[in-house]
Image 1: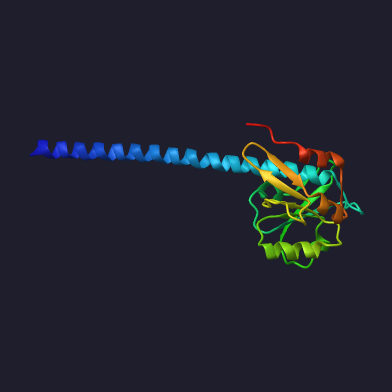
Image 2: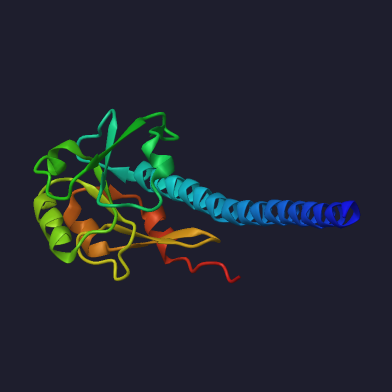
Length: 191
């Protein structure tokens, strides 16, 4: 009897040990898989920040602000790094705040707007509120780069590029250096 109990205890003990090892292996695989997307998302957010700050540094307002006010409008995917606040290469500080799309003070409290996901109606109201005000607009998700957005980001794992809507630039009251306009015409590097 003692032999049968010991053998059963050994089998159960081995099964528990194997189960624990298997769980540890599965947890490490799951942890490794979850780290890759987080790293890529962080990398894309940093790249978006660099592109946005670059665009802002080549823009000129009728009255240059000492402190650049960037407003985030709508749910955004790549602004984690921007939200921390930053300083442009020129030394000008950039403050970042989130506002609702229908906030009546957007046109007066923002020098630039970074637009996330909005409905068509929300976009229309936002751009109607910006008419006649020198506000630079950058859209995160605007496949057609519609009227209103000056810049439309194209984010991929390899790079962040952008398109320029020249009609919107002409109407905005914000001057954009020609070098930035040339950059938007470059084709992305082939993989």
